[in-house]
Image (cartoon, rainbow, N blue to C red; front, side, top):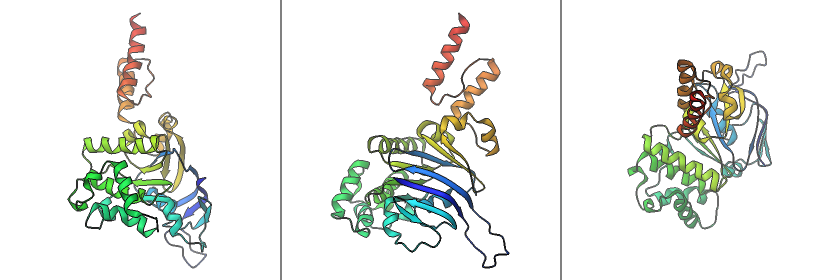
Length: 288
């Protein structure tokens, strides 16, 4: 069980007159997302519908057409069901976490979510989550005096303390320095692999997609153009061109080597180690 979108379309405004056309931000989207072990990248240019889609997944928006099944709760345009319990199952961290932080200590901020959702022993839950994220030493500090990476972890801790099944992050590495960015992504990887948390991130960084993510959703002008493993995406040059997406850095390097040195190499390598092994294999064969 997880999230299923069936023929979902969304418009920010629906004219009362049926004669006027509806401008859909998302059109006929079908997606299945498992409750465990997913690590999904949502990519596409500005205006493609990425932020709108994740807010549908969190039930902040209701579909204009179609239906969304969130852990057995079916949501349509005319849904009358309570949305608060549904939103507890899907945690959403916005691009700028400081907008989600407002308490005077980190502990109080992490506790806010579980208290709001009626979870027992919110302080204990908050401390346990802080331990997982490695921020126990920050609990008595003001969240507004933390670094960007620390603030992101506090924002995520507040969401995780509410015990969501799926975690969604909008551009989680934006504005982070290179070292903090790597540390943060490694943390998300551990959260996915060791704690089996399904994670969805909006990103424009194809290097993040190639190194960390397992599955990719590509949006273009409200249409779902691709849903599958990252290697299938990068091997589809026509699709990349159509959606104006770039190769990750390592594939660009391998592609340049293949063209300039006329090497018969497999360019679809995602780490320096993989690239080196492939080049060594081909150069070794040529030397023989």
